[in-house]
Image 1 (cartoon, one colour):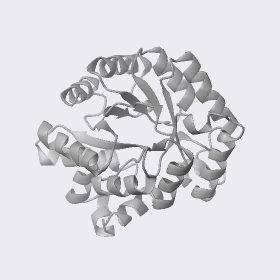
Image 2 (cartoon, rainbow, N blue to C red; image 1 turned 90 degrees about the vertical axis):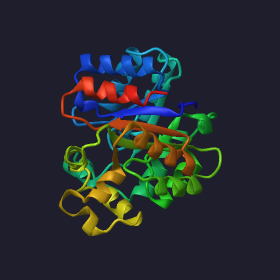
Image 3 (cartoon, rainbow, N blue to C red; image 1 turned 180 degrees about the horizontal axis):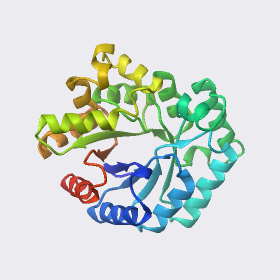
Length: 285
């Protein structure tokens, strides 16, 4: 499962289909190894993955993440096999337990204990499969126990909203031979005021999610750091901004800490696809 050293992460709901075709064509041409996408409201993960596979030729396509409450394990396994049989073995299934508001409030399910629920789901996917250890499945893992589960039952982990310090801990928990693909938001701007505004707006959707908040507190941020949308120290840890060299230095910190793959997420003015394309071009492999 070769993801390449660099990938791109982008929200499924930020573009219409024509714009997504434009973006995936551009990202593939630039030589990135993997395009990751979210499962946003109104976008079903695996069918959207099929669309991106159809619009590309070489680049890997990965879900980040497909919510395990959205489809049962048998459906995920069948979808994974279907997409790889029809998409030249370019699909990576990134799974996650999501968050209470998105599971109970939005979907109307009961949010179970994350570790036990994910373990049961993965064991169901693997049951009776001779190639279970080779299935291109990774999970969104933040805490120590979920990272260890990723190392035990999947090909690796895809942590989101993390720091290089978390990457080092994730590498230790995953164990050898497991893929560690981390996401890093960036803003190609040396204007602190503008970058802070963009970072705060981008992170606002995540600030109320307990899974992320708990992980940030584990990483040493305080409630004061997270208050009122986050202070500069916290925001710059999540969204690195500055020159190209500054952003590449942060990416290198992740590699030095044990990441195999870093997927960059451009943080830019809403609706400006040209800006997003220019930003990923600046960091292209």
